[in-house]
Image 1 (spheres, rainbow, N blue to C red):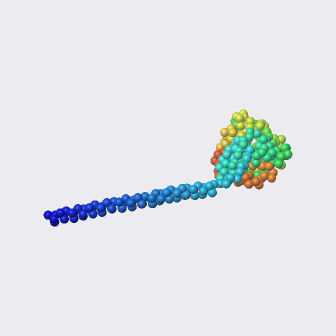
Image 2 (image 1 turned 120 degrees about the vertical axis):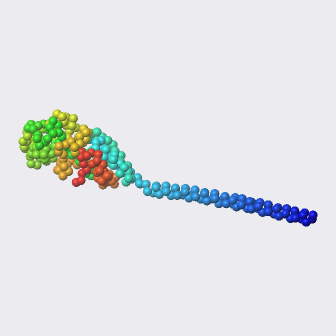
Image 3 (image 1 turned 90 degrees about the vertical axis):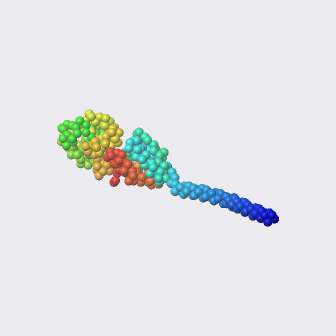
Length: 313
């Protein structure tokens, strides 16, 4: 009996020991888990801080690569095609740090006045001959900062459509202003329709016509009136900008156009005009560079299809 009691006692002691050992293992595991938790949290915080630091560095890098602002370039322009071309040039100017500000005008006087007065940096609406004539007449001090494009005059069909088969006594409308009338007559001379007096050149008028074998009757009209009067004439010579406004395209609709190597085009290239002394300003030089870039040449050619042509001289 004593032996049985002793055996039970010994079994109880062993069982208690085993239970104590299991309890000790669980406590240890819990403690280890609790101890690991702060380390995991610290790692997460560290990772988040690292992410924020990377974002800050990326933002700083972006700020460093942003284009530095260099200021504004203000330009007076007429709407078609000049203001349209300038609008297309804005992103290219912005990429160089310049804000291009364009103000549209509907006349040919105010754009020169605001540049002469120093109210605006430049204008873009006129050909060089007009600018030089304006200086002589008004005593202004405008100079050419860059040759950009030309708008070729074209001979457009009216009642007739074949210059080679022009009838005797045909009527042709030409611009009545001195510069554009001369261009029109020079273009018609190139087509073999008339011959001008020697030396008439860019000052030619109908009075300088030496030979007129087809007895053509020339009707002088304000340039802007000619497109809507086209059906009334056998042919008409129309300025590029007015042709555009009338929905005419020099490449598709004209029977003949001025070429880039003609003397007339060299005298009637459209320019960026500035007041004398400002032609080498950094912003002006940037503008001329942008307007003569391959990107802008492509824009002009794609948009105007021959009615406006980049000047390569």
